[in-house]
Amino acid sequence: MADQTAPRLDVDALLADPATRIVVCCGAGGVGKTTTAAALGLRAAEVHGRRTVVLTIDPARRLAQSMGLNELDNTPRQVKGIDTVATGGELHAMMLDMKRTFDEVVQTHTSPQRATEIFANPFYQAMSSTFSGTQEYMAMEKLGQLRSRDEWDLIVVDTPPSRSALDFLDAPARLSRFLDGKMLRLLMAPARGGRSMFSLVTASFGVFSRAVQKILGAQLLTDLSGFVAALDSMFGGFRQRADETYRILQDPQTAFLLVAAPERDAVREAAYFAERLVAERMPLAGLVLNRTHDVAFDSIPLADTEAALASLDPQDQQVTAEALRIHAGLLRQIEREVRVAARFTDAFPQVPAVAVTAQPADVHDVDGLRNIGAALTA
Figure 1 (cartoon, one colour):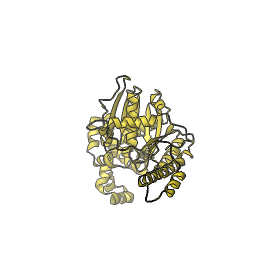
Figure 2 (cartoon, one colour):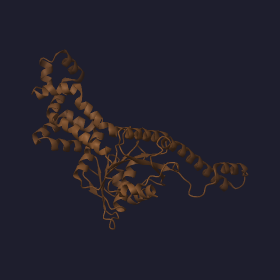
Figure 3 (cartoon, helix red, strand yellow):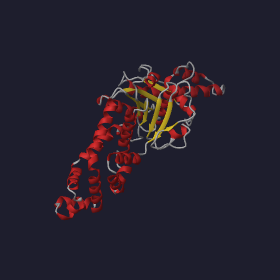
Figure 4 (cartoon, one colour):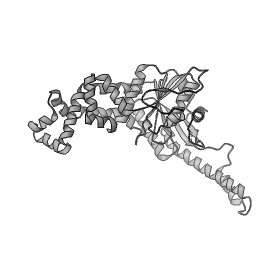
């Protein structure tokens, strides 16, 4: 049940608007971001005739399964068998490959020889696969790539399943801090001079360098020095592209949709994200509250239900009593969900919201995605 005091989010108007070029679905993990993003992309293509690509960072591959694809990779794949004859739309989907995206960046912005050196460097291999924030940063890189091609009417982004939804926005700044850090600049100076960090450590780098070597290890310093030397010319490009993508996210062409479930932690995470979007002057389009509950008929008030339960003879009308108990439990759950949702809507009364009722089964095909799209726009 949605909070009736919040303005209603008009999802169809958002998807149909040609000025909307990017929709970013964000929120805590496990609240239905991937399904919401897929349903939005499908509806944009089928109903509004837009050439749409859905970029997911969810490694669970649910998006591929729900769209009837065997797999998704770093290249957009067209979803077949959807009803776009009348509208002329198209739907494509892809799943971020973090390392492949990093490799593509290196290949695009360095010479083949330098790229080979970078790919062989153990520090690069570790950073491109496991470095904290790399996944979120590469999601920003891929979004920038898709937008720069200008071949899509609409890009729908399913943000990474991070511990915090804010990681998606913080990743570029974290990478910039890493690239601008004092330690890295110290390593860059000898690398630019053509001498390895290890040779400086063993020759004349002094007490500080020997201490660093002792802590990190000589081989790691050698790998890091080689990585810095090979990647030196690209550092400014990382920051520049991150800044450009950040500006795109601030542009009115982008719409952020917060996705949450009617649970305390999820709604609190959505509120944190809303505060951040407002502070960063990013366009917050609305809140999608997933997995809510409602009654399909004119409800008997909770007080009347409980009074009726109390008046029944325990020996009689067992079916009626059980039905009333179930109904009372549902009403209590709805009341709890409304109270939890109000923590967001009270703090952001001007943010439109839409509720999507809990589905009887997990969404696993295109018909299920259509049902979600219909619920988003009912």
